[in-house]
Image 1 (cartoon, helix red, strand yellow):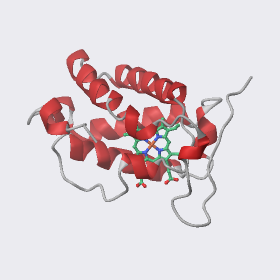
Image 2: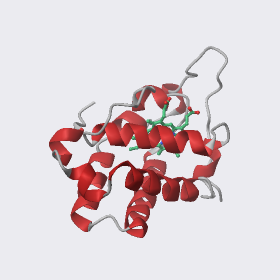
Image 3: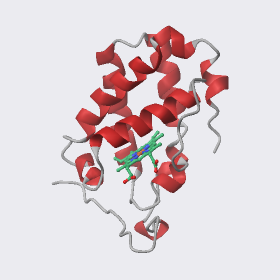
Image 4: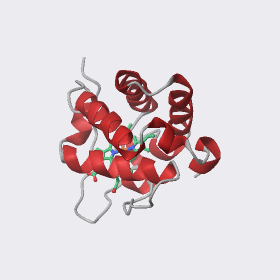
Length: 148
Ligand code: HEM
């Protein structure tokens, strides 16, 4: 994966935005939007909101140079059981932008955050369900058709 947080964020980024509490708040707002989005909510049917929020927060805090508490899968391995087309990635990216604005993350910090988020696209998006498989033997691939 090409994304390297420290280079993008610098040493003081996390303190400047208000530490882990800010990252947590952004993800609370983001997952509120994801879990109620008519299409994207379908990808989270097997997920517990508090768990994905805290995993996502640990993941980003570590990227931003904070404590390395994230012990989950790499983004590619974490999403291999879902057919995630580019349009789904773009919708989530837009909802992240709205969440950053709502929480009041300053524009310069917002731009850096979004730039790094965009760099995960290649790891997360797939072109066809054939590229997907369960993360363990009995796990079924999640395919969510776009609502009419
Ligand atoms: C920059 C984009 C993204 C990043 C960095 C990211 C990161 C992560 C991380 C770190 C986890 C926890 C994985 C684990 O511990 O196993 C996760 C889980 C998850 N992500 Fe993403 N994600 C991104 C985009 C998306 C998109 C576009 C969707 C689709 C709506 C999505 C849906 C999910 C779901 C459903 C889970 C829970 C998987 C489970 O059941 O364990 N993610 N993501």
